Figure 1 (cartoon, rainbow, N blue to C red):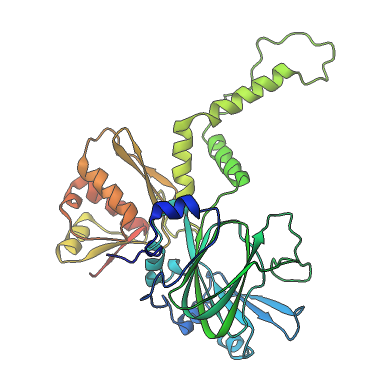
Figure 2: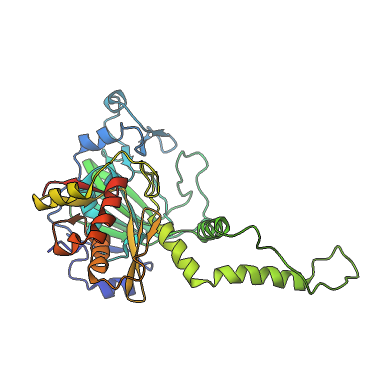
Length: 393
């Protein structure tokens, strides 16, 4: 059985009393958790092209902060001061499979809400200053110690320091202060001000962040999706037009017609369903072989897949791919990396089970329900796109 980060607290209690409501300190929530990456591996990852990384260095005074963006090189790390610096690497789970295991410990929250795993490694005194996030986050201490100062609730109107290279609150007062050691977890809902400061060296903190799309993003993405799929022949119509005393006026009748057009699409649950599954599974970073591309470098055949599974091999979900499903009329609709896979009219227990397992498990072995031709063809499509890959058990 995998560890449960909330300890003895029932999930229902956490959701009703803490989730998006108030901070929670969980002492020894993951007592036997090893750091998902070693510090030198994290530094090496920050030197790679395509990896989002930052290095924040505080000078001798409170006003001296320097922000560097990766990719870095060995020389930069060799020139770091003895204290007051922090290395931050985004989406570590996309590059290192072992890091994804930590994310899976938090799948008591819907998977589509999980964003990525950011890891920070800090020297004594290192931190990013007092700030707040617009999303939920679990801060897992995996090595060393970090002091967390917890403040009030802030929003976008909160004044920020204009002289800082990162978003830093201009006025911050700690309400509570906690020292986290390896295995401790701190949950913070959106808007809670916090300031983390490494106490001693070898301080590694894993941030499990959750997606919280803004209303602006939801509206933009949905209207873009709807607009791209509508015929240009669909136009504004006014066969009931009547003479106006001033033709420069936009009448209330006109506005009602526009509102009717908008309402038609915002109240279409089927259309929203099709869009949302695609939206929440779109990869954070562009895939090399999108699922609907004509060609692929991965030219696997069904025979390759059968042979691999028969020999004891497994299938593994790509760390950067996103899977989700929706239950509709007793069948599962699968969404993978921004694309939809509808089993159609098939009343097939095997395909429904496969879809659920693809969305909950990282690894698949040679189970009987995989062996149907339709299921093998579906897996082959994901194999060719890179959404899953072959591995040894």
